[in-house]
Amino acid sequence: MNIQKAATETSIVVRKTSLLNRIRKNKIAYLYITPALLVVFLISLFPIIYGIGLSFYNMNLYTMGSGTVKFVGLNNYIKALGSLDAEFLIVLLRTFLWTVINVFFHVTLGLIIALVLNRPGLRFKKFYRTIIILPWAVPQFVTALVWKMMYNNQFGFFNLFLKTIGLPPVNWLGNGKIAFISVIITNIWLGFPFMTMVATGALQSISREYYEAAEMDGASFFQKLFSITLPLLKPAMLPATILGTIWTFTNFNVIYLITGGGPNKATEIVSTYQFNVLTRQNAYSLAAAYSVIVSIILIIITLINMKVTKALSQEGVE
Amino acid sequence: MNLRQKQKIGDMFSHIFLIIVSLLTFIPIWWVLLTAFDKRVSLVSTDFIIFPKNPTIDNFMEVLTHPKFLMWLKNSFIFASGTTIFALTLATLSAYAYSRFDFPGKKAGLAAYVIYMMLPTTAALIPQLLIIKFLGIKNSYISLILIWSASNMAFAVWNLKGYFDTIPKSLEEAAMIDGASKFQVFTRIILPLAKPALAITAIFIFTAPWTDYVTSYLFLTDASKYTLAQGLYSWAADFKTVSWGVFCAGSIIMALPLTILYVVFQRYLISGLTAGGTKG
Image (cartoon, rainbow over all chains, first blue to last red; front, side, top):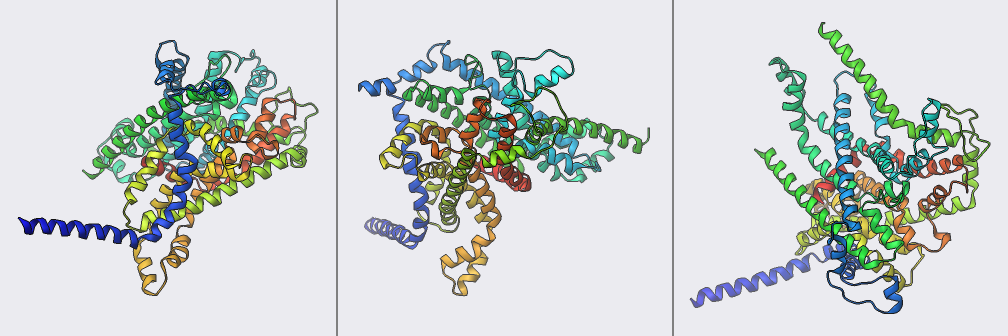
């Protein structure tokens, strides 16, 4: 009994010294990682934690000025999600709609284009591909500003074009519903090339032998598509789709730069709404609460992503 | 219908489809080029043209001699290259340590970066403003370089660590036997081998300050520090200040360097993005 105890004690001591030893031996490693950690902690992590704390207060320009900042518990969250007609809830639902429509078109268009581009023996592939990836390559900020010009009522590309072919002009950004469609069109244009590129990369890694074998068995085009191509694209396309979902959900540039969330808040999504609450209403705590809610949604999407990726990699092992 | 005919008809439809897609993709870009390279008498043009009527580079001359535009260009360049150098140096050092050393706390450190990527960064804006004021560096180049570096660090560290992991350890061991120190191994063997990954990560980091509007809008109140993004935004908000031609020329100057880099490095950038995404 005593011997055993002594043995465990020594093993603890040994482990302790070995831990210390390992720390001492890796002094250089700590030296290497510290600067980055310091910057992240001071400039980002600490402010985030502070910001999450702020979301439980009533801090805005007015309460700060009058010295009445106080703890309000979950009030900001109740204000955001508590009643069905709460502005934030409507904006949140619109963000889901915006995300679903965009990602659907990104993936479908991206896949179809990649499949056509992958047709064996087709000429000018490289040329098409270079043109098609341009919307991805041009900085999104510049694209959004340019589309704002193109939607201009009097002098924009679209209305000049409609006039030339004898059609009446469209008020692209003046009407809430049309403005929402306009920003979606812009974002579809921006987003499908990424999916095309991911799908093209994955298609090129599918061996021709699968198709040759299927052709020998007399498989039709659609049989090949649904039993070879699409299942083999899944490991690349699913993570890309989830990534695209996160990007679309948090996209700021397209809507903010083209409509600013207007007219009458009709195109506001969470990222722009939160920014407007912060900069126009100076409601700091409320904006922080919105930010936390969005983060929780994104964490859920990311967790689903991790599960899916794990499931896929296990599928690959089998 | 024999097989060759079938192939030909299929090719034809594929070409028609791809030409339509290419046109839809290219129209906005062509329109910007057209507006920038065409001479207009008024601020805007009311007729619809497909090719420039009076080709000119006047708009580019005007924007490149515009004192404000040059100042924005300079500021954006300082912010973006400063952030890239600073963040890349820090991220490379960390990524190397995470890839090559087996130290207590390594897993926790890496996991912390993943968790950090999921946190509500926009909630941090007001506290960040307070910190910047507290440090007395408001409106300085260093303030925004720090903020952009911090927000890009997690991605950069993971991306570089992933690449370092693929470099075989035997290379370093051989050099160590020859008497090289760990630091020499790092600078003479690892870094040259990691050039592609460093370039890709640098492009990603550079993009953020170059095109970010929110951060500079919130943190910069001194007009002499305004960035290209802020400048072009102000031109686009009120199209009466400059002609559309000049605005488009400015947009092209802002977009062109990154566009070329993205087209040239497309494959690596895409794999970097998806790899970073599945990890994050």
